[in-house]
Length: 89
Image (cartoon, rainbow, N blue to C red; front, side, top):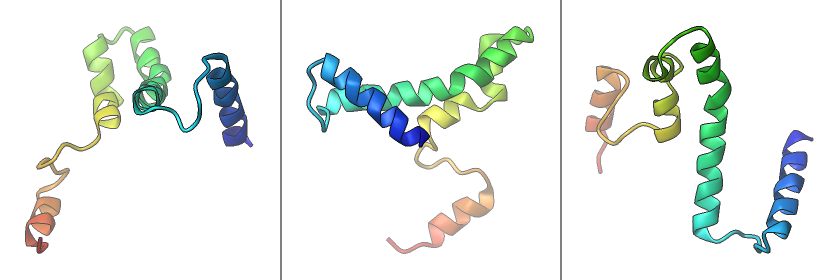
């Protein structure tokens, strides 16, 4: 139900902006970025209210890795790196 409600809200906003769905790539990517950043507002905000510096707050809640995703060639553990190296391809 929440997804349906969010979709309806976005549909209304698209209508107000005179944007057709599916959205043009730039608008769609900006929306996805907004979602990723919005997910981090509350956790980072809680850390800031506790007196943590912004960069430390982002580190504590792993905000950057959540927004950016895993970078190519970077693995959580050496075991994962070895598994990827052993895959043919």
